[in-house]
Length: 469
Image 1 (tube, one colour):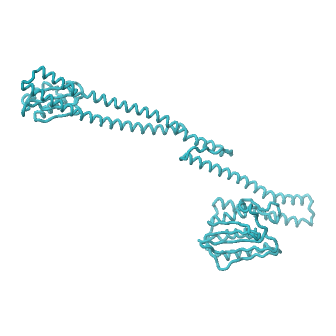
Image 2 (image 1 turned 135 degrees about the horizontal axis):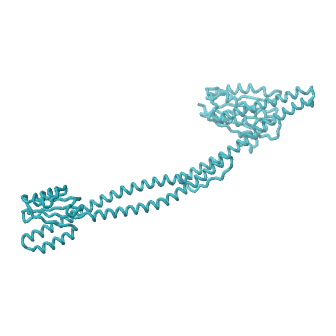
Image 3 (image 1 turned 60 degrees about the horizontal axis):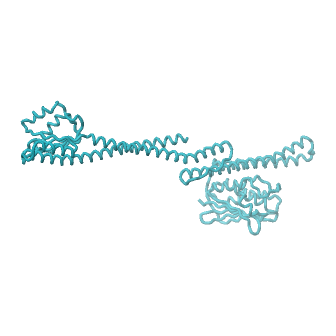
């Protein structure tokens, strides 16, 4: 993975660097060449003026041929050019051209330039081939005058060797800088990819350990950039997975325990009947006990299935506009059978109808759980009350009792799976420990909330808040 990422970054970096170097070389070459041509034009223009002046002095008899030759050599040396002063006119132009020509394109252009000089024009070519010098040159031509009369032309040839050599050297410098930048960039990329890949390798190893069921140490976070945030998110995911695994193991252990207890009881009763330990007259009594255990198992499996549907999101709520006051009254009336011969007040405190969009069956399940728990933990002579009210845009359901109450330390835990306040094993307080967790999940699916509090006078109050719409 490291080599692959480094290779990709290196190829991108090398490609961008190459493109930059090529473009920079072209731009610098063009700028330098244009500058050199402009300087050469100015230099040759000054040299042409001096050469024309020297020819005028020679034609006027002010200097001799040797002095003219010396002056021309000096001007040519200063301008770094070959200077040719040719005296001609229209009549002998063809003859002069024939002497110079080998019928090449360069000589045809030379004839055109010489004809332009007779017309009083100056000529300048940034790149022209000289058959005489057998190289590319900068060509400048100036009319050779005496007074107002044009006597011929002065041709100046400046070889391009220097310009080519300077451009080549400049490109060598740019190439050297590019190679240095490539080496430095490669070292930087090696260091950068190492820093980037180290936490990724750590996460890869941790993921393999997690996949095999082992625990892994948190990934060290050395930066606050994207890699650091990724490592932080991975650590959070790992923590949540470990918590989920602990919950799963606890869930399996609790379910196994809840299933084992009634099954052990039923097995014991059956074994006693088979072995004849249980007398014939006590069989019916034990069958009724076995029926209670079967009902307990049935309730437990139903709650486990409900919880699985709720947590997987496969359960769809069938919401409709429901009168919660009427729903509470019907639910409480159906639960009065739980009282049996117990002396217990079970009342509904509701006045006007209170409507909300809920799933009636699921809200009835919540009420059955809350009211059933209140009845279970309230001794004879006590009271269980259910009220329905409106608070702004919320509808409140309140179930309160005068029972034994829930200790303050237990209140934050009562909605957890398989949590039981009574740990004595009293069958009167028996239950799966899933009811309140299911109730909270149903309420939250309705975008509501549920709380529990211990009342000052004793007993417990559960409050459910639901949005009106």
